Length: 295
Length: 277
Image 1 (cartoon, each protein chain N blue to C red):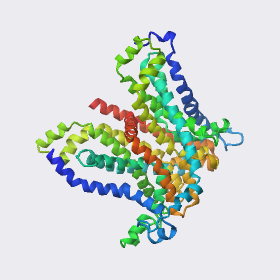
Image 2 (image 1 turned 120 degrees about the horizontal axis):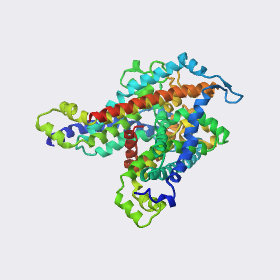
Image 3 (image 1 turned 180 degrees about the vertical axis):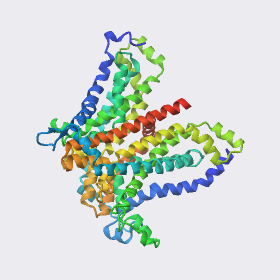
Image 4 (image 1 turned 45 degrees about the vertical axis):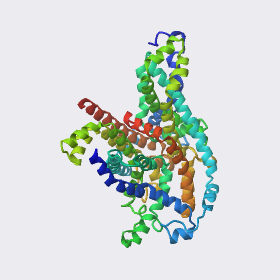
C-alpha cells in the first residue's frame, strides 16, 4: 500500500540506517575482528604475528579448555533438569489453582531474576560462608555438624554449589514462560478430562504436557544455551578455582586473553564457545520446526 | 471446578512456605545481617538483630562509593535503553511497512545478532575501544550494548507494528501524512506498550551487565554498580554487616522498578524466549 509514495518521501532505508550503523560498528565489526584476532599470536601490546590456524590446533589438545567445556556440559545437563522441573512445578501450582495471592507469589518467586548476578554472588557467598553462613550454622544447630562444608572451597562441591546459586535465579525464568504457556491452555480440556474421570497425573500427562510441548522445547534449549555463557557468578565467587575445579569456558577465555596475555588464543576460545552456542541455537530452531510441523 | 478449588486449598500453605524458604528467607536474612554489628553476626548469625546498626548503610554507601556507581550505571542505562528503543522503532517501522530491495537480506543480517551472545565479543570490543580511546569511558559500555540490544528489539517491534490495524494506517496515508508523519502520529502512540516492554527489559539487562564493565572499565570513578559491588565485596570480604548493607543497596532500586513494571518486564522476557534467543 505504501510503496507508491516513498519516491518523493523519506526512503525506508533511511529509517534503518541509524540502527544499521550502530549494529554494524559495534556488533558485526567486533565479530569479524574476533575471527581475525584468532589467526594472530599477540600479547595485546607489541607487534602481532600471523600464525594461521595454529591456535585452533592447540585448542584441540588443550586439556584445560576441555575440562572447562566439560564443566559447562555438566552444568547444562543439571540445568535442563533442576530449574526446569522446579519452574514447571511452581507454574502448575501457581496457575492451575485458584489460589488466593498467586499473583503476589509469582512476583516473589520471579524476583531473583532481576537481581544483578553480583548481588546474587554476594548473597550466596554469605550463605556458603564456612563459619557464619546460613547452611553451616543451620547444620550445626540441628546437630549435623559432620555435614558442614567449605562449600566453595572444596573442589568436589564448588561446581554444584555454584550451580545451586545460579538455579536460584534461573528457575524464575522457566516458571514465567511455563505460566504463560499453561495460561494459554483452554480450561475446557481439563473440564472434559475431569468429567471422564482422569486423575491429576493423567490430566498432566495427556492434556497439559502436549499443550505446552512448544514452550518446553524452548525453555530446555534456552536453558541449555545459557549454560555456556555462565560467567558472572563463577568469576565473582571463585574465578574458576580452587585449582580449575570450577573453571568454565567464558572465564578461561578472559584468563587466556587478559591475564595470560594470549589475545589470539582467547579469541579462539571465544569462537569455540560461539560455535557451541550457534550449534545449540540451530538444533533449537530445527526442533521447533519439527514441532510446528507436527502440530 | 469444585475439585480444583479444594485441591488449591490444600496446596496454598505448602506453596507459601516454599516461597518463604526459597526467596523471602534469604532476603530477610540478608537485610537482618545488614543491620547487625560483628558481635551479633558471630553470636546470633540466623536471628533478627537485637540492636539495629543502621550505620552499616551509611558506612557501605560511603566506603563503597555507591553514590558514584549509581550515577555511572544510570548514565549508561538511560542512553542505552533510549537508543535501543529509538533506533529499533525506526528500523522496525521500515521493515514492517515498506517493500524495498534487499529487505529480507537486511533483516536476516540483523537476526544474526540473536544467536551470538555479547560475552564472546568482549576481547575484540576491548581492542576496538582501545583504538577509539574509549576505555574507562561510559560510551564503551553504551555503544556495544545498544548494538546487541537492537536485533531483539527490532524483531519484537516489527511484529507489533505488523499487527496494527491497517485501516488506521491507511487513514493517515489518505489524510496526506508523510512516512515520518505516520510514524510520529500513528505508529508511535499505538506502539507505546511494546516500546515500554522493550525499554524495561533493556534497563534491567543493562543495569545488571557485569562482564563488559569488568573488561572495559579499570578506573574506579567510572565503575558501574555491579562492578563496584564486586570490588567492594573483595575489599570487605569478612565484614558481612557492611557487605549485606551493600547488597541491599544494590537490589532495592531494581526491585522497586520490577514491582512497578513487572507486567512489561515479564512480557519482554516471554517474548524474548518465544522468539528464540
